[in-house]
Length: 581
Ligand code: PRX
View 1: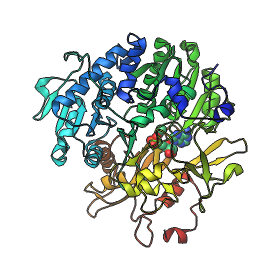
View 2: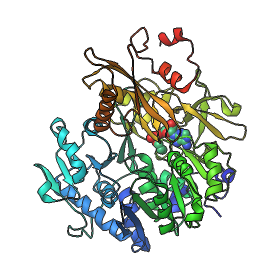
View 3: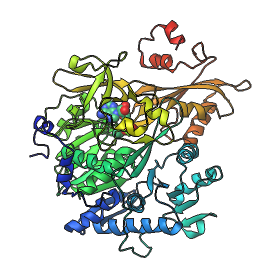
View 4: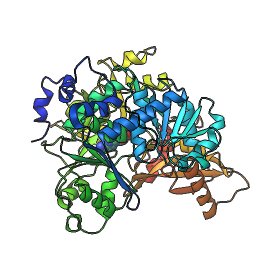
């Protein structure tokens, strides 16, 4: 029997207090994600239970108990105090998926600082934008990634500390500190910062269409949303062995790769060894994984890998599969039923929502290709594209919107109140963030289009903006265009998503060259590498088209929509209206 007994019954009389009941949490108890993921699990008698099973490239592997998690996160919390960091400061975690990433995430929270995880493949410019916007005080990183910080440190006046968590003392540069938590003296006790429900916890950056990325700020009270969705959607129980393939540089990797499972005391597995189908299946087999949360790009890559996995590997431990990040095509659901004996359950949510909003629940009929239904307790709808009135289950395509007030909702965009306000339909122009996020009469608009069928199932249609979703990661065209024009050969650039069989979309750039530069394969490669290094491999254009002229509106804005339509073979629409954009 699954944790969500029946979807319809769970909607009746729903209250978020059910999360507190699930966790057996009392109002006078500590409300603190760092402590709830470690100390509290130990106090409940599970200190010796395995918390983390980790494997890296080659045959590197290790495992840690909840007591290890408690002690090593204490170690990081104490370090921050010793360095003179203050609660509320932003502390960036910039490393691969090594065990110290997980310890330090909880440690930063225990100290009362705001954890700012950033994807370790980011280049110096992606880092600079995000560390600069957040006014980050400290970065925790590894020898491998420290060099990117060195390049930009002079331009980040707020950045006081760079801590290298593995590597050699002799390789440090001025102003860097080495701290290897596993060889440092054990910190047996640390009193976690007295957080309250509204105390900031995690700052995740996400890309938009215009401007640089925005930092979505979350709070400790989000834990109730993450715990209940983990239980009802991912169906985790005490004896499960769970694998979330997401990197904690992105929200899935923290909400469901750290917080939700660990507050429930679940054993998690982490594989930090890239992707190959065989390595992944082997990992499932070796660890007897029971619940697996992954992404459509990975599932499509598994589909393309030759062979029948269950002939080669013993995958019989698997009992529940879920997916997030991009549209999960019906073929992928049908394939997994055949190849793995279980369907992937699609789930929809965002950095801003902090937790799963729409999902296919265990026990509920899956309509392959649909994202399922809103989580009980979430009021969702689809708004008319023009009037912004709810269209209900008419099947009409509109904007996915949610009524504010769920526990894990983002509380603001860091230093960007106007953009925060613009996400709410009907928001008064002078409304403060706290008035918006608690007003159930407004709609928070997600930026995605969908329709609802007569059975209440949501069907994803596409983004409502120019943001590119490549392999489940959002990249902002503006960020890439800005970086492209920093290349000496580039005069102007426009960036759009282009269809891709595995990644759904990849980045394509249209580039106008400065005089004196000639198009060539070499120049194309050079520009691609320039972006890969500055931003990230995700942002790197897979194709560059050199053009004499880029289509623009009369006011001079580049018409990405027109270029995108050409790439997707869609109706270009009435150009005269596009030009008035
Ligand atoms: O466009 C939607 C897409 O990913 C966006 C959110 O991206 P991010 O904030 O990076 O968080 C990703 C993981 C929670 C959404 O606005 N998206 C997410 N899930 C789905 C999806 N698109 C289609 N189907 C999904 N299940």
